Structure formats: structure tokens, C-alpha cells
Length: 279
Image (cartoon, rainbow, N blue to C red):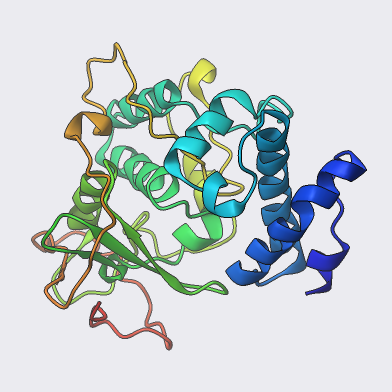
């Protein structure tokens, strides 16, 4: 892709000459679907590599993309980022989780929990959240969760983190037997580019703790936070750090009992069967 070869970050020339080839090779292997996506990935990786180079650490991608390296970079290497684009800290995530639990209605409460679980837990952005159906979420016997992402970057995201039980809880509430329902705002048939932003405008979030942007995935760190909130944050669930293994024994999330209220059934999707895929 030309965007990868032509990309030049705002870094000193000698630094980019040292780290550039490996950054390009890594992003090319990741197969970005658009030039913008390629530039975004290159920018993030280039700054991480430059920070590692300046601090005398290994600069190759296999060293930069470990949990320990990411934590270190988020803690000390993101000073160049604006407040609106920096990663959320664990205390901020815990506060958002507490705010979600404190919403006055089930719709707002589970809507925010769904966004948090898909954003922090699966790194999905708004366009990927909006079309998801409940049967796109699968739970394995070992507690891992698989999310079948739709759209231009169709893929399966596997997660076994502290956000997995939150996602399962939200999915169970949104599900109904034999119905293809939306995962986010299942009672609403309307789907548009402003589905997430219009929903967030109705929530009750203190202005001091309102970092919702959802223009893209919300990065996360993995340090165990200490929060004074009276609401138990997901990190109290002692997530496993092992790589999830989803096998044919995986199962769809149990559907909640149907009711006489509006079902919010999603319109048929020509590219996806109502039957959950086998993983």
C-alpha cells in the first residue's frame, strides 16, 4: 500500500531511519483496509518505537506490543497526545463503569455497559458497535468471549478479560429466543451514524468524568486500579491473562425471556444468518 511506503512521522530523520522499516513491515502484515487506517497504525507504532529508542529499549514490534511494553508506554510515552485522544486510565475506566451502573434506567445502564465492554474490552469503534446483533457474541466454556465484527473489517475478536462478564451480562439482557436483535439499544430499530452519540447525549455523566468520544476504539491499560467507588469495577473479577481458546464447545449467550413489550427485532441481514456461527 502506497500510504505505508510514503508515510513520514514527525520524528527526527535518523530515528525514523532506524525504526521505520520494522514499523512498515509490521503494519503491512496487519493488512490495513484504508490509507487512513494504515497511517493511524503507523503513527501509533512509530511513536511507541521512538519512545523505546529514546529510552534504550528494544524497538521491534514484537517487543513493543507486549502487555508490559504497552503499559510502560501509556504511563510515560503519551505526553505528545492531546487530552481528548490519550488512553483512558484505569481509574477513569472504573469511574465510567460506576457511572454506567448508576444510570436511572435499564436502557441507559445497559447501553453504557455495552459500549464500555465493546470499547475497552474489544477495542471496537462506533461504526462497528452499531450493527452488532446479540448472536454475534459467543461465550466459551473457559469464560472467553468471541465477538463477530461486521462491516469493512469483518473479523472475530477473542477476549478473556475483566470486561467479558460485563459483555455477557449486557448480551443476555438484550437477547430474546429465536430473534435477531441488536446488541446496542435492542429496542431501537433506527441505525445511523449518530446512534451512539445521540444515545450518549441522554445519559447522566458528570462533566468531570465525561471522556466519551467514541470516534474510535478506547485503548486500555492493564494495571489493577484502586478505586474508591462503591460499585465493584470489572477488574475485581480477577481476569485471566492467558490467551483465550474458543473451540466448538463454545455456546451462544443465553437469551433473556421474551416479553409482551416491543421486541426491537433487527431487520434481516443478508450477509449474516440468525444462527450463531460455529467458532
